Every structure is written in structure tokens, then in C-alpha cells.
Image (tube, rainbow, N blue to C red; front, side):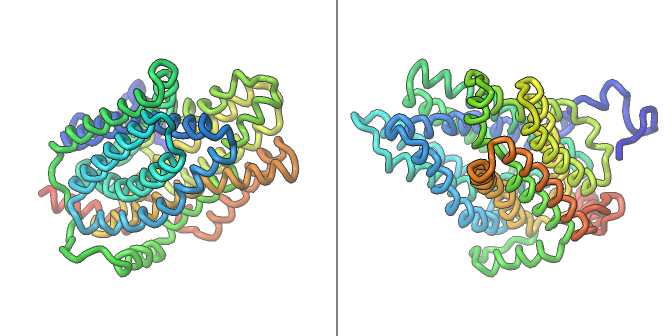
Amino acid sequence: MVTAPGDDGAGPRSTRWRVDITPLRTSRDFRLIFLSGLITNLGAMISYVVIPFQVATITGSFVAVGLIGLFELLPLIVFGLYGGALADSVDRRVMVIATESAVAVTMLVLLVNTLLPSPQLWTLYTMAMLLAAIDGLQRPSLDAMIPRVVEHDQLAAAGALNSFRWTFGSIVGPAIGGVLLSLGGAAVAYGVDVLTSLIAIGLLWSVSSIRAEGSSDDRPSIRHITEGMRYAWTRKDLLGTYAIDLIAMVFAFPYALFPFLAQDLHAEWALGLLYAAGAVGSLIVSVTSGWTSNVHRHGRAIVMAAAVWGLGIALVGTTTSLPLILAFLAVAGGADMISGIFRGVMWNQTIPDEVRGRMAGIELLSYSIGPLLGQVRSSAAASMTSLRMSFISGGVLCIIGVAMSAIALPSLWTYDDRTNVHAIRERERRSRNDT
């Protein structure tokens, strides 16, 4: 899958493992989108820590904290699909700016609620639901902008850079949130989140207008959404990417068990390390992702990476050694990042721009719902069997499910961007537009 060392066109050996920053150098709009996303993602991760902290402080209930994810699920599903239809009908830049403005207003409401003598629990739940709805509306437009501002042969590099941005925020954002909570409380944390949204809006204001090719002034409707679903159904290779991601997350996303694992290891102090280990593995892959541009069989890479994710999670349940557990989680996180990079490349290289937003809405659901269901599965399996068996069974089921998907959807396994008709068509279309 990777060009052998010394092959022509592969580039110097010293640069093959570095993250490829070419899209940042060649595309002004991508630079602006990347920087705004980096900043606003830090803010989002701060709130990711602060909202559950406030709920826990008010209620003292684990169930009350867990309900946040449940309340977020329905808005994410409904507005993710509708946001995809909007992304194919309106100016995507305007859509992202409008939704980021809504995030800033939501953070202001949370800030005011925090300053009340008795912060209201219902406000926290309502704003969490609203943030999920805003994310569902924004993400399809944001994702659909990338193929329009980056050269076709630089999409793998752009995907790796976006993955790095997300992973960096996932590691640094919660840490900043914890520091802000300890130094100034929730009000300061929400204030910083408002500031990150305002900075992001300022950067996005300079991005060029980006409307979907062939878009009309027709209002988004159920018909638009079903047309997108029909297109997805005709693309079995795309269905394979959705299925692989959903299977991996539903069966092998055990993050809800980490507090219990830390207790079982008599290492409560290591809880933060357990949460961070996967992100560290993802970050390592991101900063050494130069090789991804030389991979052409993306479907095969997705299948193998998802299987390694499952293997890493299963191995966690086989040992009581904390260093080994952290290593296995890092391997799993790195594999998940590889799968994510190549899923993004397949989507961006082959989906026509006129349906790109709606496909991004479906993608949002595939990688957002899985972790929520995975928390339920892992907790239920642990209660019915044991803590370690939940890790082992989830990893094994993930590997089996991934293998079955690859067999049932052979067009995913055989996908090659050099010969795939959809990739060739998009490459030719981009070439015509550039000339």
C-alpha cells in the first residue's frame, strides 16, 4: 500500500513520515478554516469538561451526568441530516459563520446561568441539546468546504491536518478547561469559549464564498435528504466506510469503563492517562502522516485499521499492567486515526459537490452515534459479565463485524483511487474547473 523506500515520486525518506503541510501553504482559505477550527475546537473541548462538571456539582449523580449524552443524541440526528441538506443549498461559509455565532450566544447563556446564585440544571441540559443541534447544522457545511479549497491530490494531507487539529484540541482543550475551572471557575471557562468563537468567526469572515455546485434556491426538504440517502445506498464502498466506523464504535468504545478500570488497577490517579492514551496515539499518527498520500487502496486500509482498533481494545482486557494498557490504548487510538484519515479521503475524493453536504450529514451520524451506543454496550457487557470481559468481547466482536462488512461489501475492500470510477470522475471534474 505504501511506496517502497527509494521509489520515484515518493519523496525523500526524511519527509515521508512528516505531516504534509502542503494544503496550508497552497490554500489561503484552507489556512483560515484550519486556524478557526483549531481555535474553536479548543473552546468546544473546554465546554466538554465544564458542562458535566457543573451537572455533577449540582446533582452529585453519575446518572445525571450520563443523561447529557442522551439528551444530545436526538438533536444531533435530526439536525445532522437537515444540516447536510442545508450545506447543499446555501453558502457554506455563511452557514458556518451563522452557527458559530449561535455557539457564542449559547456560551453566553451558560455564562449568565453560572453567575446566578443557584445555576439551573435545566439550562445546562437545554444548552447541551442546543449545542448538539448547532454541531449537527454546522459540521456538514464545514466538512463540505474542504474539497473546494484544497487540490484533489492534497486531500489526504488536508484530512491528516484536520485530524491533527481535532486530536490536539482533544488533548489540550480538556486540560485547559480543568485549569480554568480550578483558577477561575466555570464562568471564566465559558468566557474563554465565547472568545474562541469570536476569533473563529473573524477568521471565517475572510474565507471565500462557497456554494455547492449546481445548488438551487429551493428550500431544503425531506426530498433533498432522501435523495442524499439514495445516493449513499448506490455507493456500497461509502456504505462500507459508514458500517466499519459504526461497528468499531458500537462494539469497542469502552471509555465509560475507564473510571472502573482505574479503580480495578488501584490507580485512580491514572484515570486521565487512560482517557488521553488513545488521543496520544492519534496525535502520533497525525504528525507522522506524510506516508498517507502514497496509499491508494483506502478501503483496505480502513478495514485493517478498524481491526487493529478492535485488537487494541481487546488486549486491554487481558492484562493488569498499566503501562501495557496505556500502550494498547495508544495503538488503538492510532489505528482509529488511520481509519478516520482514509475514510475522509474516500469521501472527499469521490462524492460530487452537489451532494457533499448531505453525505457529510450522514457521516456525522455514523461517527457520532457509534460512541454513544458504545458506551451503553460496554457498560451493559461489564454488568452482565465482568469489566475485563467487556473489553475483550467488544474488541473481538469489532474484529468479527469488520471482517463481515468487508466480505459483504467487497467494493470497499477493492477500492483503489487510481481505478475507482467515482474518484476518476471527480479528479477529471476538478481538472476541468482548474483550467
